[in-house]
Length: 361
Ligand SMILES: Nc1ncnc2c1ncn2[C@@H]1O[C@H](COP(=O)(O)OP(=O)(O)OP(=O)(O)O)[C@@H](O)[C@H]1O
Ligand SMILES: [Mg+2]
Image (cartoon, helix red, strand yellow):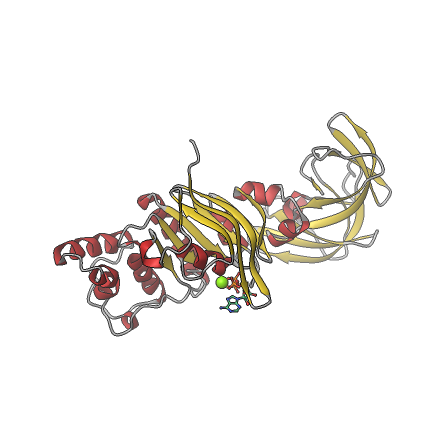
């Protein structure tokens, strides 16, 4: 499918006094996609949304939508709505009036308002709750009212600023599925903000990882998780183990790297050269652990001892202290029928990984 850029940011910069909240940012938001801005607190996520919505003015750069420049267009003239972290419902108004508020302000016909509110309530599955007040609703239901209010006038783009962060874990998971369903059902563009990497990975078509007002990497959840382009992205998007290594030789499409005196063969996708210092990155689930008393693999491996075994139900996490000095974090699927995956503290082990599963930086 041809990707059509609906919202386009070019060189977008926003300063607050001496803080550069958004720093010469370029971003294309595609028609109909679920795009997530992921990054640590203070990296500029909310500011990007507020700039798109028109609540903040740019210091530099340009934002366009459907090919027209938005600079200077007031928020209510942009085809964009926002769902905020705090639902910001009017406490004294009923659910119906909360959702209808914007339409009433625009003096829509009463009948049309009733129809559109009913439709929005159906989408968020709150039909029948029209007359309740916000205090008579659960957190999740209030969140749905906030959603209904934002989609009732059918915006082209919905901006969602950490809309699930006030909900407890269970409810959040439920609402994640709901949000995805609503996104599919409406077919509009969602720009979602979170600092939770799991939430970003499970919900998005694409993720833009932000740091200090810039985008470090943009891509599908798989690209971001499996092929991080730098250490910031690698570390921010889940646990990762990092080994210092030296390239000892380069052959067709492969390289041999030395880690603590052991030679490992890795894929050479980054034009490595002999003698180069690199880092080998491995996700906890990509590392294989072999107990010493088992037949040790013929390939190269690193020796160490199990420091901690943490049973997690579906998986067990192992903290392994390598003889060479590093402490690594490994996740193994847990299957009680398979006795050979039962590890204990103090056990001597060897670790390696399947060829090609490494990331070289
Ligand atoms: N109105 C403001 N006045 C001064 N500084 C601001 C203002 N709004 C944001 N900032 C600063 O700009 C930077 C980016 O803030 P922003 O709210 O966009 O971050 P964020 O990524 O949304 O963070 P969080 O995850 O904590 O919500 C921060 O350093 C913040 O302190
Ligand atoms: Mg924010």
